[in-house]
Image (cartoon, rainbow, N blue to C red; front, top):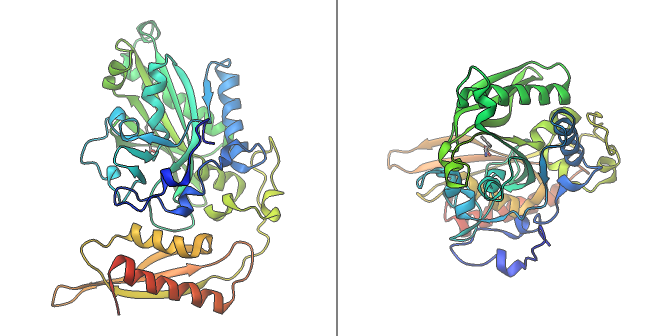
Length: 372
Ligand code: PHE
C-alpha cells in the first residue's frame, strides 16, 4: 500500500527491456523509513517540520505519503528536465515501463501540488537512483522538497525584483534551518544548475574537515509557475537529502545502517531526540576482493553495482574502480575492488568467497564482459 495505492510485484518488476526494477529495490517500496518517529530519518523530518511550523505559523502543508511511482511527465517533463538529460537514462533511473518511473527526486510532485493550489508545501519521500556503491550512496534514499509561492504584493513592497526577493528569502530560510538543526555551523552557498530553478544554489556545511553538500535549491523557473496556474507569481524550491544530514547529525558512519532492523541500531534513537550520537556496536572487519575484466561498449558501473547489490545485498560496502587501461588492440580492462562488510556481524571466508564466485559468474553471463 503506497500512498493509498496498492502495488503488485508483477506490475513493478517485470522481465521486460523497458523495466529495470530489481527485486531488492521493489522490496523497499512502502517501507517509508521517514514516517517512523523513532527512526533517525523520521526524527529529522519532524525537526524540520518544527522549524517551519514555528517560524511560518503552520503555513506549510506537509505530504509524506505520496506514491513514489510517478509518470515520466511528473518526474522529468513537468520540471523541465531536457529530453537528452542523463538523469532520464535507464542507467540512472528505475523505469517501471516507458512512461513510469520510481521518482528520482521529490521535485516530481511540484507541478501537481501547484495545480492543486498549494503555495507553501513540504514533500518528504523515498527516492530511487541507480548509482555506484560507497558508504554515502544507496539506490534508495529520502528527500524533502520545500516550495513557497509569493504574490506580487510581497516583493513589490520591497526594493527588489521578484527573483532577487525570492532568492534572498530562500537563503534566509535555509540558513535558519541549518542553524536550527546544527547550531552554529560553517556554511557556504555555491552556484549551480538545475533545470527547474534559476538562479540555482547548493548549500554546503563544513563537517569533519570537509565541505558537505546538503541541499539544492533555487528560484523556480517562471515556465513551471505559468503552466501550473501561477503566471503572476514567483517561487522558490529546495530539495534536501535526509540521509546526508542525518549521517552528520547522528554520527551514522554508513548509509546502509538506516535500513537495519538490528536492535543495537534502532534502540539508540527516540522520538524528538535530534542529534543523539550513534555508538557503533563494534566495527566488523571489511574483506576486499578484486575482479578484473575486459569491458564492452554497453558496460556501465551502475549496472555492475546493481548486480553486486543483487547478490550481496547490504553486505557490500563499496565498489571501487582501482585500475583502468586500454591495450594496443583497443580493449579496455577494468579492475574493481569490492569491499564486503556487515554492519551487524563478522562474515566468514566461505560466505564471502561464495558471494564473490556468484559475482564473477553473473558478471560474465549478464554483463557479457570477459574475465581476466
Ligand atoms: N531535485 C533536486 C535534486 O534532487 C534538488 C532541488 C530541488 C534543486 C528543488 C532545486 C530545487 O538534486
